[in-house]
Image (cartoon, rainbow, N blue to C red; front, side, top):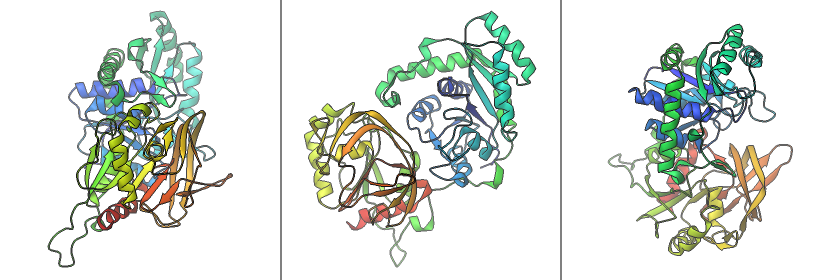
Length: 461
């Protein structure tokens, strides 16, 4: 594919300015014009990509320069944008906010530079008029390598308010590409970890995305935004699209006659387990697995022939009663783990494997209890595998992300999953037989050997 795919980065001075509304609405508005739109999200967030997928009909993908390294941002972007007419990238936090203590690393500005993409700044104008020019000028001039190609003014109160804002911005030299009035119907409900995922809202999520699309189409100059995207040029560095496949992913018999059997890897989904990166499934398939999704809220048994199990993140605390009530599946998961089959879980999956969650019985694979907490645990982590497991050999370095309001006691087993490096080093997670359970969310594209190792263990366990 061409490395000059048209693209825009939707950013803001701070969180809460309206990035998700504008980015999702713009994706849907472009799609309504007949464009194939590639949706992306800067950072580790799992929830916004669900809304992006609803807007575009394509899988929402993350671009995280911390988890995957700056060198993979361009290739992963091109992989996701393959066959598309235009790409829209939603930023994270404020434009220049990156990993704590790491400078610009993993910020929206950093990713925009890695992609060579123009930035559209979404400004909450609800409590300002002429001051908006100083704000925009500061963001546009802070880093000369970041091209702020336009502004979308959000939460504008009236025609007079819009007139004052436009007059001020004429002096800043940054074009106004859209003006959005306050509109409650495009808001999406939040709770303890952010927006409520699409899988939990269904019809309401469809209506919200439609409202975002209508608001953006009515208030923004779609032609000018598309023209800005088409002026982006080639992705810097001559990047080629990332691919999950490699010769090592497709083992054959020594005589080369046939590929070895494809083990069934069950992946938890449904409303309780919505957090997953698309590349994980692609890597498992490329490694030779047959990936079969299932819903722990409804399915009373694992998929037939399950040889390995992957349970990612989500909100089991919201569905604890239903998960606990599905005793047949809990027993099936426990039996699979007891057999020594590979089981890899992150965050929500960790909670599901515990004895109990908020006093309700879970799978009992781990001799640990989980409960909700008022304290938010949030941040990037630099981790090293303590010992050998179904995911990694001892000493493997990976970067991850924690984001939860729960506590597991004890926080690690006799064989911890990870050693967390940094100012306050600690061990975390559980490795026992074929189980690898941890709070840490990781992106397997950064270490493709994880998927190959897991599938190989599924074949031999």
